[in-house]
Image (cartoon, rainbow over all chains, first blue to last red; front, side):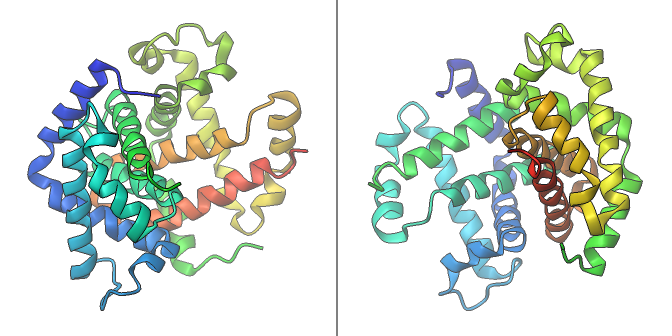
Length: 143
Length: 147
């Protein structure tokens, strides 16, 4: 499954549209990840504060969104463009790839909440595919 | 047996009480058919599913969406034995409809996204947690009788 030219435009346009609230999106998505899927906290045992609305969760959400915007800018070659992030996830973080799907779902729930009108099924499918491809790029170097 | 907290019970009752079934049912099913197009395989006799607009305007999809959503009512009323409540429906989906149980999960995800859109800020992380736990139990029960 790859993004069509049209879908790339949809993704770029949508992410541009929501960029002013990207911090909020990231923070909310991380909060939901921790609350709805508590097993994900296993990756954040080093945080002083593991609460969903705490500063570390918020900061992590913002970091994740930064990565997603980088992926949008490299949408034509995500595996190549996200090489550093890919190596980070493979050799340092070693996040089990199942968690990419979980976080992607949380991000889309937040997008749906904050942008109910805009997050139509057509945009949803393009974003879903995009997030799946980002996940694939991030797990590129795993084995 | 699934353990439900008071918060979870109250949340599920409240979310479904406030839900507009005629809106959410069709929206969730049509979204599923658009976002996961392979799910269209079960709806060969529904007519025009050629593109998102056709799917969202298709009256058979809308009607079926309402049917499916009302199917959740039984679980809402019998939260302490969802497995038994859906035993018959599970057999139906397995032996007659031949639906891959993974599709239940896909539809549940779309339903979550639609409910999030309708509820907005009221769909807090805790509410999402309760709602997804409920749907996970439903999904598991519907797949239970497959063999």
